[in-house]
Image (cartoon, rainbow, N blue to C red; front, side, top):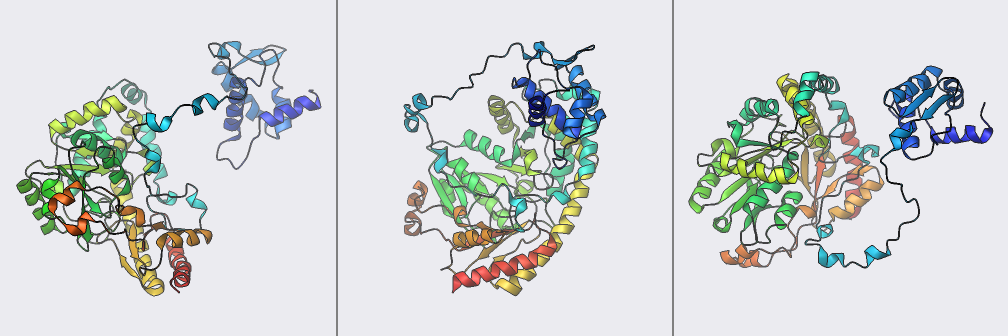
Length: 517
């Protein structure tokens, strides 16, 4: 039996928890690997016997036996008859000895990084959301999913199929710049036709989320001499992406029926729009406006980047066909995502464009990261092929419709403010406070009471944003941009239980009343 100090050492190294979500055996194996690789266990020092370690940790002996045996199989440990278990020295070979002393950072501080870096991205304004949003009682957060709606069993089935030996042989090979054929086929035959979009395999590219597709398009089509048209308010990350390539922007206001494009579009190389659910106002561009926009694009010779934002979340009537489905001239580059119906963390998006554009985007993507992980692509492909995606969309749509109704009712009853509800789907409301009330202040006070909302000022372009083409258009109003509104905020309902919506809005209303007075 070991000494008290030895017992204490093993207990410190292997701290197990029944609440971690991992089995005790997995936790022990992970702790053993970490201790070995970090050099905390010497190669000539025997580990405790399975019986002794089990006693010290308060676990079943079989848990320790299985953990030891697994690490023997993976050659972390050696079993010596009558002596016990030892660290295998071979597992530590080829490792540079780590310098565990303090690092002298003073040398790095002598470098003028401000002049070395081409962009100061830390100064960009972004939408900030708490990472630990699940601990808030009323998470009216946008862009997150309700874990209770995730199709765990369906996803596991898809994962199992992608882990068959034949499938592993396919997705572990270097595909260079090619995408998984199953996923491409399923998007072409299952996802895009729902939006009225038909394409061939050489007209689609899988991306790491829709945002990655926006970056690829911006890098291919924009430079300092070219102008981009943006909605105002607008998806913040899209505006930040475009600003990396050009500071020439035309801002088009958003009304009750979506973006309002005028003759200033003739100065644009590219117009970015979110016609299905405008981000962040949720307004939908009517069919006749879409047709008119396509006609204007042909007459004034600009391209359209359509972010078909939340188009898959439909629960209140028939969705309007995508701009891409109406495009007869190949001017629309279509961007979509599966994040809202699966999980944002999967980062599965796609872009549809003429084959020549996709060929260039594929070459650019190869230089960046070759292709998204093929194991994830194959799993999502199976998920679509088995019909799970259509099933989960129905379930989410029914749930969101109930939450949408509850949110609309609660806002009318307690806040009595101007709000824009999604026309046929979506997952958020855009709410206007009295003009003298700051949504940013409301956001901070609400967080103190367990309520997450999203202040809307960052969605508007700043007053200092450059817009060369505004001056070209000769518009005095746009040449001197007004101060951006600070009384809008966004309320998401994708991650909050229906029963919590009304009490959450009631508490929020009390804070608004306090600020308004």
